[in-house]
Image 1 (spheres, rainbow, N blue to C red):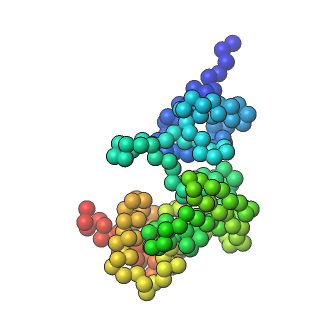
Image 2 (cartoon, rainbow, N blue to C red):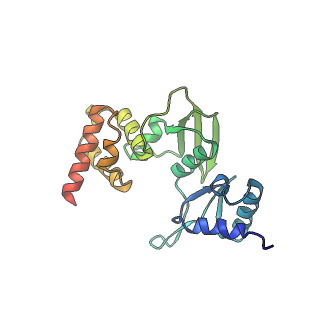
Image 3 (spheres, helix red, strand yellow):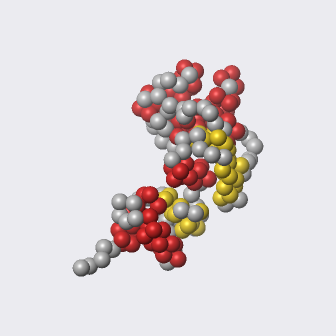
Length: 208
């Protein structure tokens, strides 16, 4: 009886996703059990077909023809994948959200997230990812992109959003493909934030 080609199936699944997609062991549990998946990913990493980011997390690196080099996943994506790995609900602290959106002028190599999991700290590409246990319930918004923006706007304040900030927010919205449809699915956010984002989206449509 021919043995199933588990490695081929794992590699096919990786190849079917865009370069830069992060994978954890559980992504492949419908192919084989955990021990086999660990061995396969370790073997694929040794063969340079995937890159190990940290324990239990792998990626097929994206190549930038502009920069002429391979690009590692963002710290934010790694943090979100860690949360997925451990089944945590997370959202960024105000300082981290401001940095993500671009409303903070301070460059930081520390990314802090509030979590319903335990306190944990990781180092990734010289950046620190810190998870702090919070009693707060998960923000009921079905988009990490929108959560980041809402927390950043809350931290920045309604009366400080001027033309320069609108340009920064507009760039964040465009880069992360935030749509009116997604915004309208989350009308529980504060009205002033909804209107700021809605007006930026409408301006963006007029400029297209």
